[in-house]
Image 1 (cartoon, each protein chain N blue to C red):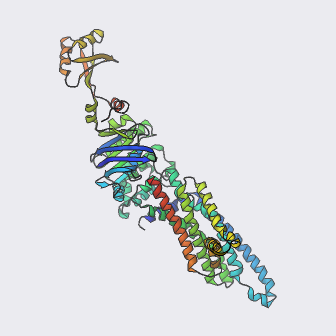
Image 2 (spheres, rainbow over the protein chains, first blue to last red; image 1 turned 90 degrees about the vertical axis):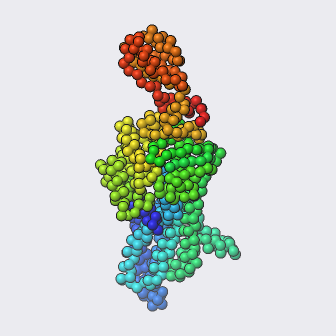
Length: 255
Length: 308
């Protein structure tokens, strides 16, 4: 941990002295605010109509009608914008020649990778935290269940952590930030749509493709179902990304 | 202090350095000299642990670079050819960051920054963003980061490249001031730099070691003839023939306003020359040795292809 923090601090400074972090966070907040507003608006009009019928009124559930779709929307926004957070992590060092400073310091490659990853996680956390502020009002004026709400946010964080793990890997492979972002985005999209292929496949393939898809694991969490296998999936995904990054950096220097 | 044994580096089929053996003594400034693409940067990258060697051994400050890389990196300061700077940081923040990754204890961090700023003469730009400072200052920041943790060994890859003449002089003085406390190895292809700054050189070409040793050692080893330049009141072709007749003198000819006299290295003709000048009343004004300059030495070693 000792050597990790200086790197994290430096990365956070870079994020917030360049426009990237501000733009990514602002766009995320703008979109999440818009989705939240329109979902609440839709929820209100629906509940007005349903209030006339006692049977339907029982069905009104803010978690199901506002938060579950909100989390799905946010997860897609994360898929689109997190590659912009991870793209510069190693690409920029390579392009600027500053990697020579890092790799000739007594820090290990693992410390450098973890430091950078931690910085991107902190930005993700800040982003999610800020986006949660308007949703708190639903607790003041309504009574949503807190557990599915919290689990949804945990799901978003884990999903984002997995995205960033993959992004850092692509970033270690190229010195071009755009290439790194596009490759990350492409791979994420591929994993995202795996479940679509899963629907048309059958048997073992269906299970396998569904297991590999981000969507399947995230869906349960937005509905308040916590399964450790989902947690394991995201952590493995993130770990795998970091492990590959380590291998790339190590092998590049030995070539 | 820095030692290599049979160091080899291959990039695929390309052999960047072949069987490099040299030694740098403690507290000295050593130059790594060679034409472009000779393998200077590769050698330095291996010594600093940035690149692993394909074969052979490199020892820095008594530690094997491949077996104890962390200790070597801790005892070495390195300025790569492209100064590794983060333009969005201030000079002070940048040096603080380097101090942290070089394991300078938090309590001593401020003192370490103060010291590096002072040595490198960065007081004027300390609080400024790196992207806004001049090329010369950037180079100084690069040197400051290399010595922030007070390393025993400092490795500088082309420290004066791209600077104007005044800045070059400043940086050379800065490097010279570090001598003694630190062992320094610097690479360059500016020959004058070596004579002005270095105690010794390692000359490499196309990855091969061509020569290594102190400047005097090399100069004597490669010099075939001794000689002097003399300046006389009387200066004409008759005078030249007088010298040519002196036994032992191999050649005598004009070089500008001076006469260059050469003889075999085994003899010393200086006394006889002075005596002759006095006897013939030639009006001797000045006499200086034709110590082989670094250009001649370098060209003889690199272009002449003389192996050690």
